[in-house]
Length: 93
Image (cartoon, rainbow, N blue to C red; front, side, top):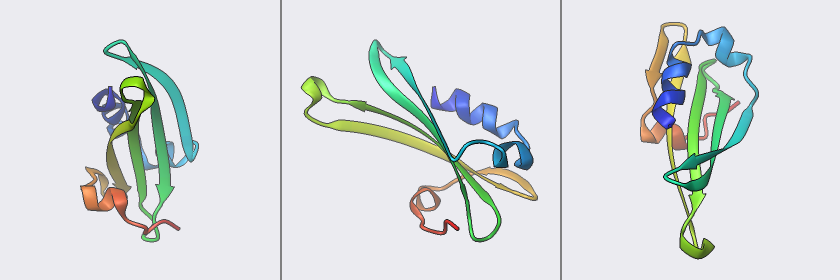
């Protein structure tokens, strides 16, 4: 599910990603379990955009939660996959 959303973003232009809402979420079903699928777009100090796709859900009996995320950095030279360090940076404008 994340890969499908990442692929869609990779085909988008910088301008199209810049026009997206800062956060957009929806409910999704993964292996019969309800999860939250959220896309975040953040403008970095460098002028680049960080688009992050996150899937999150609760564990058995609601005793915990899990999440996984992937991101793309958009710049004038095109999109590139974000590293785990870039996903956790605080270089947001």
